[in-house]
Structure formats: C-alpha cells, structure tokens
Amino acid sequence: MLFRKPIAMPTAETALPGRPFAIATAERHFVNGRPLKGPYPDGALMAQLAMGCFWGVERMFWQVPGVWVTAVGYAGGHTPNPTYEEVCSGLTGHTEVALVVFEPGKVSYEDLLKVFWEGHDPTQGMRQGNDVGTQYRSAIYAYDDAQCVAAEASRSAYAAALKASGYGAVTTEIAAAGPFYFAEDYHQQYLAKNPGGYCGVGGTGVSCPIGVGVRA
Image (tube, rainbow, N blue to C red; front, side, top):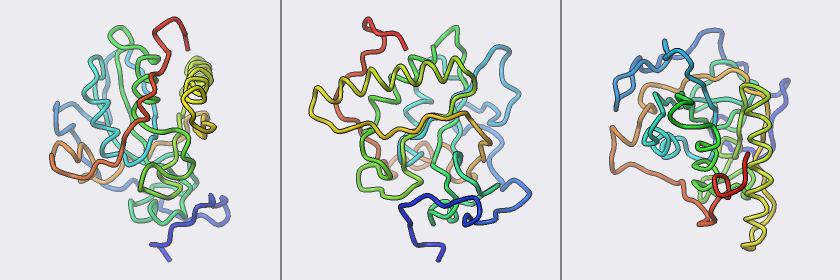
C-alpha cells in the first residue's frame, strides 16, 4: 500500500499517522558547510518552494547569490515527521519542498520567485514532467503576509505570460507555511553528492515578468 501513488489528496483522517520525533538528517550543507537547521544570520528570511523532484530544485537555489543555505524536506500535508517512502505513497499529503534561507539585502524574495516560476511548468497539477503524484505538485508556502502578497501577484503575472504562450491554467498552490519536515540525510544536496543523478525539473522557456516592470 505504501508504494501506490494516489493522485487525490488524503484527508487528515486518511493520511498516514507518522511519528512524534523528527527523522535523522544531515547537520551541515554538503556544498557550503553551513548548518541546515541554523542558527541563521540575523535578518535572514526563509522561503518554502515546491516545483517537482526536490533534488534539482534545491540545486537551482543553492546556486543563487544571496542564498545562505538550502535544505530539502516535506510540507503542505498532514503526516508529522514523514519518511520519503511515506511521502511517495501519496498518503501524507506532503509535497517535496526546498527550504531556502536567504539574505534579503543580497537577494529579494521576488528574485527567488522568478527562479521558481521559470524553473518548472506550473500548469501540470499533480505532476512535473514524468514524475507523477501529489508530492510533485507546485506550491509556495509563505511565511508572512508580504510573501503571500508577492506570491499571489507573481502567479497572476506569470499566468498571463504562460497564457500568451499557449499554456493552460496555473495550478500552483499558495498557502501559509506550516511545519517543514527535513528529509533524510541522503536527499540533502543530492546532486552535489551525485553529480550524474536524476533531475526531472525543467521550465517552460517562458520568461517571468518580475523585475522587468512588473512588481510582485
């Protein structure tokens, strides 16, 4: 049962029960050596972004100047402290998420949103490319009202750009950030540890208008 992939989201009642303790993960970032769980620099902000298989997503963001540290994990669902296998079952409601800790004096939240929109196809619903399941859905989990407003505005702007290029409706979920559950050690910075590893993330080729006269 754990390896079936329902496309419909489970309810809190039908989701797997999880566990009361966090699963083991790495302490430090494999690329830059910084602590995954902090402490973070004074003034640093966080973003939760989901856009398909988190291996490739995380690599996109750790390469952005001004990003202090990244990690991968699970969010947006019901099951506390899930394992990767449980998330892949479709029975937790979680999606695969990159946690991005950034210094707003060096890179803005809007800059990260531009990377987000241009880095995947947000019109695919419960899939991204050949990866199918609720854990691959597109999502932005906002930490405050300002992030929520920016995310909503950027979604509207990019939806218009996609429509003009013949794409369908944007299916990206935008919601308040809830708990972020760090994924297992081997998932953290996976593509730095395995340079030839799988990366199923790819964009549409449509430019996001943030930064060229459209403000999120």
